[in-house]
Image (cartoon, rainbow, N blue to C red):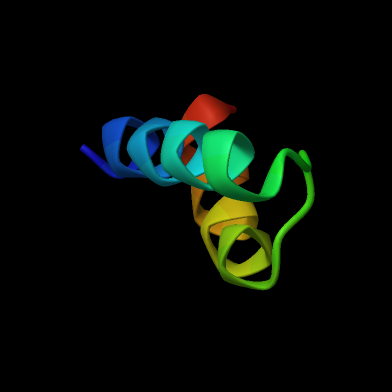
Length: 37
């Protein structure tokens, strides 16, 4: 469920900020990385 949350936040931030890297995403990135692996 972490991956889904990360994708949701990424899509929302991507459209708003238009950047792949975000301060909030950084924290989720680590969590997603563990789940992705």
